[in-house]
Length: 174
Image (cartoon, rainbow, N blue to C red):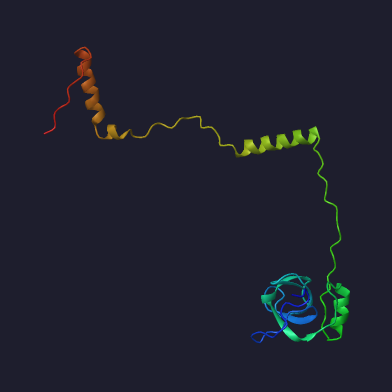
């Protein structure tokens, strides 16, 4: 198998995938844009350039056209642009972003750290819940008190203390 052509025949109505073949991208962000196959990477992927971004593309995402352009393998973007001008196809022009230095982090001085700590204290005091001076009196009482069971227990304890800490026998349930 030659590295320049994936398939030499028209199979199922599809054109061959070869270097210089014009194609239309049918999937992805660049769908509907024309491109040229610049290099064949393997069975499934090719390198494309043209109205689309120059990038690796799945063969299944391309629809080959009848037209071909004579370009070399891994042709530069300028060569592809000049070849496509003959067919009246505008090439996507991109400018690389200028490199900028990352801003360097500066260490904080002890004065800055103290000021920051003071700010935190102020905010902590502002948002800190205030202590309640008066304790809340217990509500009406526990459930036992509400059901008058506490008095019965107190009476039972008083009877047992008079009999030298003898535990009262529980009444049998019938």
